[in-house]
Length: 318
Image (cartoon, rainbow, N blue to C red; front, side, top):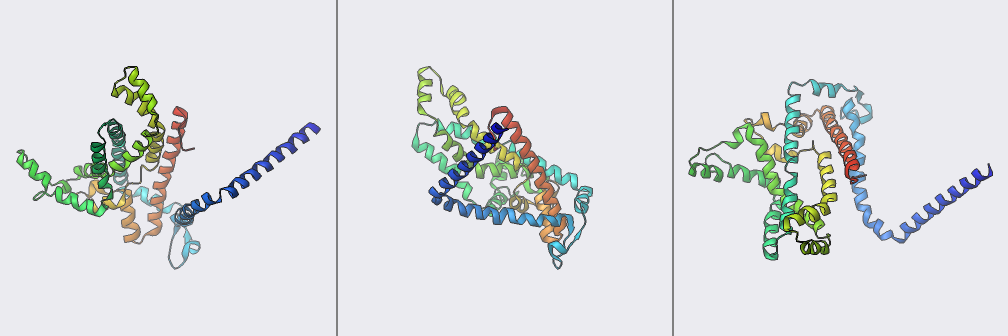
């Protein structure tokens, strides 16, 4: 009994010492916590406090009654969405578009690995500038550029098709073209930004590994496969997990701007439908229920992907 009491007291003392050392570290490095404070305040105000409003997904929300005064209706709005005759079409459009975009994930990795092997610094900087510049184009401007380039009468692409002997295509009038236009315009716009992350990781790989590989007779392809790719794999894993966890959150703005009555069958996704019902139609509870359903799917996918990654290669978010 006395041994147990002594162990318990030692455990409590070690806990107190640990807490005291943590406080001493925080006091010693208070400047770092001050720099961190704006980020914490942003996430608390913009991400966590709004979660209080999720309750309207389970209520018939009325502005005059407020959150607490509105009538509780349970899963009424979820069932309404599931019974909607276009539910499966909207869900399929969102899932297919998300998977299509996820399939382009390796492009930035391949481009970064190839660019890292260039010996000419001038050409490397030129390629980086050309690929990074589109990232600063706003979504509205990008949509306008797509309409100009793909116009059936004056578009550059259709002029090229006609010059090659083909016929003009009304890209925005055919639903089958919407997803490809959406995804590949996103690849063009975001490729440079994605490459920056991998290039920064590649710079942390020791040059001695490449020197030793050259001495052993390894060519560039083998060095990429055995040195560069394993070196950036932790970063690739984390970014892939985040991409999967954000799978159902397609960009609303570009999808909405590229929509028209002719391609709506392929272009209507959950985000645009929520906008139509929530902000335009004023059905706040219904729109919140749909958004909550979408967030739950993302959360489940994030948990599953993080668990699989942790068990396979020990790289995960937590």
